[in-house]
Image (tube, rainbow, N blue to C red):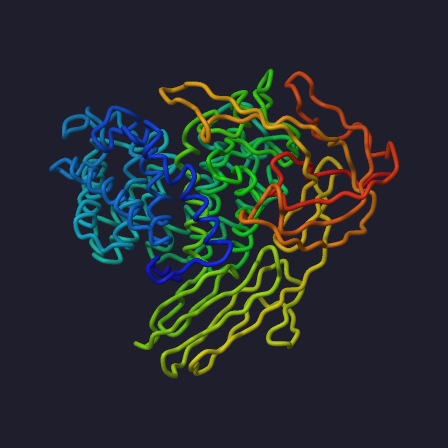
Length: 611
């Protein structure tokens, strides 16, 4: 298993730093000031939601603050952690339910205990805070005692997400390998849901709400078996890979996620995918790569991170969608919900469209991605797991070493990796090459893609390894006779011009006003197109200060499209049917520019090759 470096060792740079700054200046950095469910939460002594929302927010806010070296945000995070620990019961119970003060915990869903455990473990790893370490220890030991005695059992979300508790248990066991930690993990495993038993259920699209088909649970559960197996020292199984391929066959999307609005929704490009699923799927891929070393998990992480994540966030990251669609011709309050169990507003950009979990939970996406750029494989081996702009400051055998990646990837396909050592030191540098790359040029020498470029040498002063990835524009066949087009890790879409309608109102005790009000995006351009041919020109562009800018994308594909007969499902409103009525061209080809999926808020992505 590879290990993470601490935020103090990681220096984000380039577009990645800018993305984190936008997040800090947007909703993530202000949620504790404007949203009652965080500002007035029962976790800190208030009277609002005291379950998952504060831990969700801290799970992304803490790494965001520490990666940006933002002392004011660090102080705010510490205030929340201290306030939570101040209210921890003498028996170790940490969750803020007034029914549970050592008396009655049977009705409390302990998913919140797993989540705050993850937050405290991360906070300790970042800060070394001894009080937080002690609070985490007693919180999980209290949980074990209550489960062991039969006072409580896993149910509801705790039963569905039992494996999330293994993350803080890893932290504790590494420091204090006590038997009760393994005992708690075994109890979790026994009482929790076994997702591999539901694989037959996943074949069908069910328009009913169930835990086993809930799309966020699906995103989380990929790491389940691997976490338990690694903690218990068992041989890692291929269950995560089997489940991925099975779900991809029946519910996979063109951007590396799975459809679910709110439960598994099939293969149609007009069905939704919940934002919580995107960031939890990313987190599962991060863990699975660290545990298994299979680079497919990093390829999957990149596809979701560079496509699905930015697509469902506004450029300024003040608003987000609950559901995104691969083919999305309008974002509006529909006349009737086109989504399985979600509401008519699930497609809006806003503060908390449909439901507030994503408002708090989307925060973990970019910061945790940045935390996984560099991995430690051993005392003498550093891995650049992703070619993203960042620097690592560490020591190898006591020698100060800095590894710096200079790149515009994924918008460009070149990178320079520089190792600077204070004095000569023997070290192995391992650079992961994405699976989509047809080949790689290393310091002018072209070679086939074997997964990694490994350089073992005695490094001194400053030495650079230059990487160039090779790719061509490629078309991928999708269900319903449609195709998508990709280049590198990016999927491309035809952007649809739109009018933005700002909606300010009061709801849920929150005055929705600019910049965290709701927005409808109403189309002003044609969307009924198909690919005329396979001729494509790659166009690099300067872009602007927003990495995945909807106004000035950094990359585009110029190609010919033809109009086709594609109807709307008018019972909902402005909502495209799953496929065109006919793939035959209705007019002459027109040259259009496709932009990265993550930049296009209204878009057509899956289209037919016209006849």
